[in-house]
Length: 228
Image 1 (cartoon, one colour):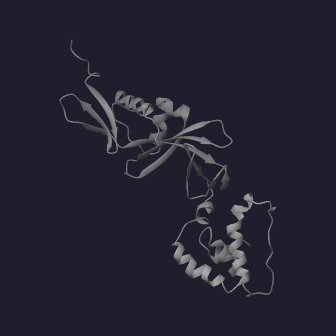
Image 2 (spheres, rainbow, N blue to C red; image 1 turned 120 degrees about the vertical axis):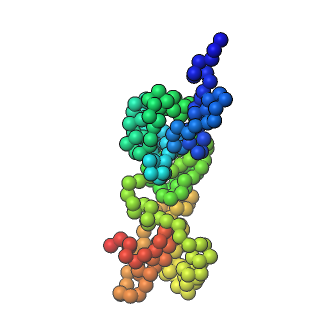
């Protein structure tokens, strides 16, 4: 019995692209690399999403989150990815088989998108750092750019110790301001109620300097970015 065309060829997803393999013939790449990155849950929502990574027609990396129902539906999946710059094979049947292959692939990760930075259970989530725990990855995502520019890692710990913390040794107020920045995420482990402190005094006495030093604990400390 002669094998059918479908029995003698298959699509294979690799880091270099989607390849068509036929018996007795060299593999042929039919589409750019594409990866099913993660299943995604969002705090406060019952909907689930699928994170898909690929390179667009210019070779630029793209990360797209699709509602799971759209991911499973070929025409919605294709429409969303083509809008984002992905090039499907010209053969529509081959495109459908590509979709079927991707649906069958297990996602590499499981994400939970949290609605705020800070503590979530026993894990502390920051705006620029994902946290792995209990078989999932906790991530914070926001459309507000300030969450990523104000809370950013720069330099090294030794640099911070030398250029910031070392100067606090000679100033109780500077030491107090820096300590407050470290104490804020730890207050949940104490019986102390939350609150704030008001620094006041004449101009050029160090109030702004204290704020800048405290800001350096969580991100770039720039005078122009202090809130009025």
